[in-house]
Figure 1 (tube, helix red, strand yellow):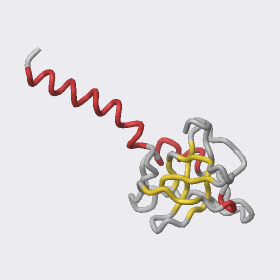
Figure 2 (cartoon, helix red, strand yellow; figure 1 turned 90 degrees about the vertical axis):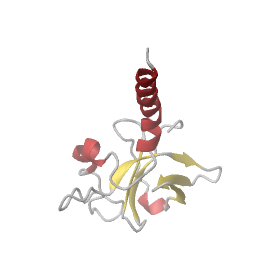
Figure 3 (tube, rainbow, N blue to C red; figure 1 turned 120 degrees about the horizontal axis):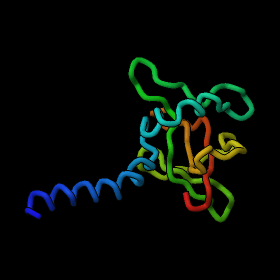
Figure 4 (cartoon, rainbow, N blue to C red; figure 1 turned 30 degrees about the vertical axis):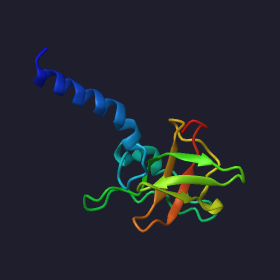
Length: 122
């Protein structure tokens, strides 16, 4: 195999390994389109307002997969745009996502509308 062929194969292998981690950094818009059908059914606790604003004028929606963990104090922390933030208890939904992962719905400014905690390894 030539050097160029090995380089191309290496790039594809690195991308395949890194993509799941990149896709769960909680970046605005990442993973929204794949999950929009069930995101639009989510309602904010206590208000009944939608968690998901969908895509408007080509701008991706505010719900997306993320990484998250439960602290020893019983509080959720989640990645939003690459930063770990405390999830307010009022935003935590009492259900699991269909894929078992953690998902968050938050504005570009960081206001969290809804959060679904995933399985412990999410």
